[in-house]
Image (cartoon, rainbow, N blue to C red):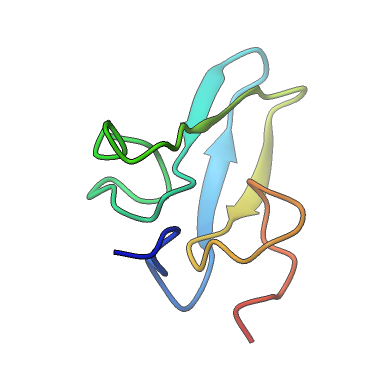
Length: 77
């Protein structure tokens, strides 16, 4: 299987909380998109872990083609 797998055709709108740690799925296998659920194990990939700098609404990528991960940059179009 070629990774990352395209997990969706549009970003998911997420309310981030300042100071909270998030793990964005980079492999596309997670059933908890756009977040990691550990399905990458054994695939040679790991999530993009980040801490929200402020509380705000963001669109997280599901196509896995963004150059600005975890945030959508329109690559799914």
